Structures are given as structure tokens and as C-alpha cells.
Amino acid sequence: MSTGPRQAGFWATMKAVLWSFAGIRRRRDYSQDAESLNPLAVVVAGVLGGLVFVLVLVAVVNWIVPG
Image (cartoon, rainbow, N blue to C red; front, side, top):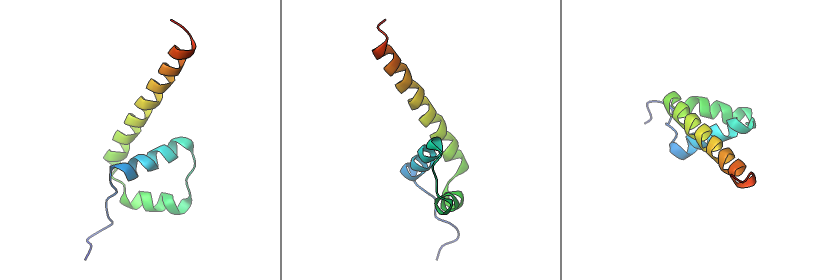
């Protein structure tokens, strides 16, 4: 007896955000995400994913270009 769509967990939210970063998402998956993802969790996951992306880029540049 469900009162609404089931909320996605942390890893499901991160997966959806990472697929969105890549720009690859099936319409069916997008529809499921729209029903189950918490907008606040998506924003937090997006900021976290963006921060990790920038830190990885900085680390790669520092590794390639000696200080």
C-alpha cells in the first residue's frame, strides 16, 4: 500500500546526476527519475559531482604540468 512514488536513494540520485553530466539518458529512465528523485538531493548531488569533477581536473593539470 504505497502512498506515492518511492524515493530514490543516494546512489540512485548520484547515478542519475552523473548520467545527466554525460548527457546520456533514456526517456524511460528520465521519467522514472522525475517521479522518484528529490529535487534537493539532485542539487546536492550535482554540486558534489561538480566539485569532484573540478578537483580531478586540477589534480590532473598539477600532475601533468610540474609546479
